Amino acid sequence: MKLFLPSLIYFAFILSYKTELNIKNVLRKVSIILPFIIYSFISVLWSENKSFGALKNILIVANLIPYIILLIYYRNINIEKLINVLTVLFIVAGNLLAVFLILTEPVLFVSYGIKQQTISHVISGKIISITVIILVLKFLFLDKPEPYLFISFILNILAICLIPHRTSLLAIGILIIYFIIILKNSRTVLLTLSFLILITGSYFLTRNLKVRFEFVEKYLNKNEIVDQTVQSRILNYKHSIKLFLENPIIGAGAGGFRILSEGTAHFIFQKYPHNIILELLSEGGIIGFTLFFLPLCNGFKNLTRLKNVKKKISVTSLFLFFFISALFTKDLATNSTLLAITLLIDNGGLNHSEHS
Image (cartoon, rainbow, N blue to C red):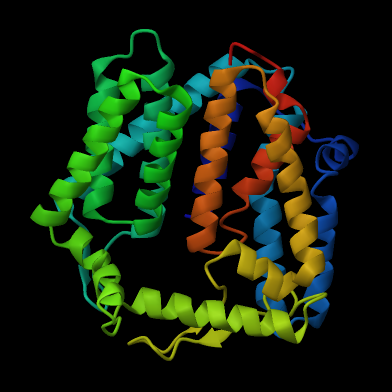
């Protein structure tokens, strides 16, 4: 499931162009992130969990391969066809998943955490969220948006409220605020009101959403937080800071984060802190953190210079979504899409077609 997004992009690319690989071209395209990748592999040498560190680095590279292929042939393919294929794939996949989640309610939460789960609320939450972003962008930018876009938006927001994935809801909420500030039109107002109504209604009329945000009320009332996820995150964050302070320059090495979640009902080893900043600092130290975020900051700076407003808003919204997700969910391998977006911006792909 970690490979869903890159696999989907690669599938769309196959439909658009026949690919070939060229090593020199690959190295040139990835030069901006290559120092971090090399350092991350080297850091496995001083990691206490070398096997997991090596596996994580391999997954990062594997996740990036479809994006690199896309970059190599970006100027030779039918980019409009590629974007259209991707858009259709995500809307269809997202809507089908949303209907499934609404009809089956496969996840049940209780105060201390997940009681029943037949499908990952994290993975399905991310798929639904990306679908929502695509729907919102099309609804905001098309001259005459089709009614199905707004209906699909309602359907997917309702699905994500029923799962519910807190990080995705937070990210979508922040992006809607971003759209309001940038665009300031009646369509953004309609989307905002719809989002707030669905969130409010789901909070009072369904079980999961209220249970998932119960920890906020307990924290404000200074009561004990029993949510396993919140407990685990707090423990992970403290351990990350401890690892960083022990070795602030080079960190504990890739895969070096490892802690027993004693506060949860299941005594399991956590292999990452669920926060990309703390993960980089604890495992890569200042060197790894700098090598990762310098390209990222440079890419974001170049993104702000785009003259095409629609393209700037579209890519910025995706960038913000993946960054917010990386602050609360999974590890660097899962969130390597941030590096992929950086590669796209650095290689000038966004300037290839103003129409796209």
